[in-house]
Length: 252
Image 1: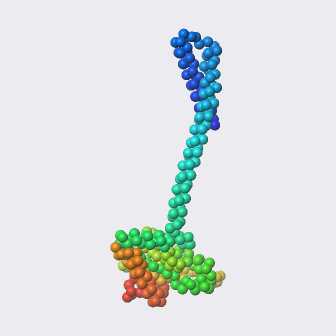
Image 2: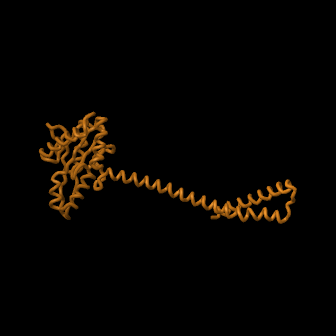
Image 3: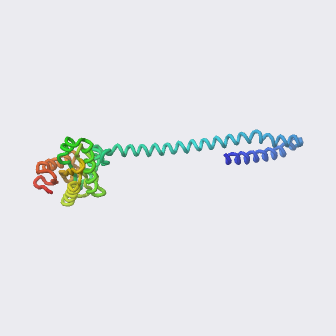
């Protein structure tokens, strides 16, 4: 408000000066003379007209600027909210991993590049946990398993929850022995969990893993089928193991 008053006073002063100078130039040129009353009118008219008009103009300008700034901030906040919602829509709310759709999109993109490996990870005997201890305990066990998987993979790897108790992992640039070693690290990290569904009761948690190397040009379905076949072999082979080759098993 103080700024508006100062701006209005300055505008009014300049208007008065301009009015007096204009009258002092024009009136004699027209053959008249600028007397006291005329000078008074030259001073009062700008004060009466320019003062309130300039104050209102500056006030409106400031209001428009405030409204414009608020609108810009609202747009920025809307953009941030949209980005956050978009990011949340790509993730599973329980584990924080990518959801199935987003994971498969990443798998498709990586499949076009080639290289790396796909892991399909399934929690062993998970239905028994839900049946015996309830779904709340099952959800907690699932989060513990997810956290262990997240600790075991590398920083650049991509992990998603692709089913109820099933996870997918894309090991960027890792194939062969390196991928097998990462899968085993994941398996051991879960195996070492100490999970207590009830006070004084510790429940072992284990996973089975099927792995397949990503082949450039192969479809998402091709990669998923290959890893699924190896996961089935791991389950059939006794669980708590990882399989990359249908003829071999990396056991606990």
